[in-house]
Amino acid sequence: MSEKPIKRVKADWSEVVLVCRKCSKKLDGGFGADGDQKLSKALRKAIGAKSKGRKAKAAVIEVDCLDVCPKGAVVAVRASAPKDWAVIPRGASMTAVVERLGLGGVEPPAG
Image (cartoon, rainbow, N blue to C red; front, side, top):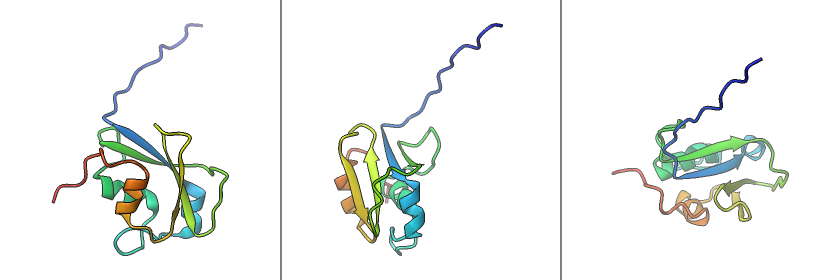
């Protein structure tokens, strides 16, 4: 039996942020301008990642439980800094979240 070749897929990502899906689900929102968005959605908007696809400047990906389980907060980790996890409390400003995660170099939305 012949083995299929491993293919490469191009992405324009300059950074990847992993966000705990379980924490996000427990909070049921708490982020963004009106406080009604999940952290992943609000963070995508804050850094200008208009889409979730490979053409975005950065990826914000929800992953299964990261086993920290803080009360009233969501755990996030920047893939390029795996030793530095952030526990982001509900209602934190997206400016503070972007700064804390070190995403200042990612292009913000225009306007």
